[in-house]
Length: 225
Image 1 (tube, rainbow, N blue to C red):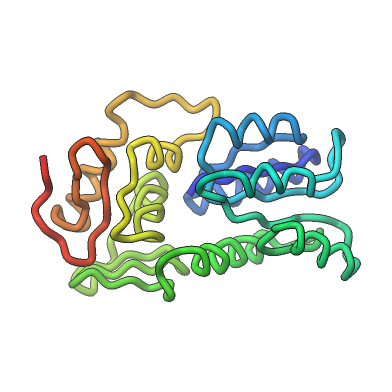
Image 2: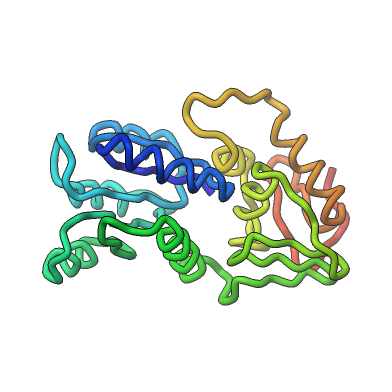
């Protein structure tokens, strides 16, 4: 899951980024609106964490740009403004949730997951694929009742597919979940992680659709390779 954090407090941005990256999220940080608009034009984000008071303008002015996107990301407003009227204004403008500073990073993580579930095609954080169980709330995977150990990158990739199972995810969309700005990746990196997940989860659970992408299936079939 790739996130855009729009925050001009460098220390806070660094702390939030470090916490979320440790939870297998990919985070891009921009300190202002101009950089945020450029990032939104270049990358398909799953979520935007938006500070309201930025050096180059009001954070809410970014929401029309977000609403115009074909696959609109979740927006959680992060602000020191604690007036009810401010919260109402943010939600009315199109934000999905609102969190008052200072906040516990664990609460931010819980809000992200809750909004993610509401926006996804699943109504439960625990998904069952035959003998495979994926718990999105606790970042756990079990196969045949036994825990499966995943790296952060493997979990980041699986999370994108598990949040919207049966949907075809393009290579570009999945690659966005793995690497942020400044990260380097070989052209075959995605295939390497797909191969690792198949070995750990069961080959047939991740289907390849030639020329389209990949999907996680409740009813696994042979891949089109």
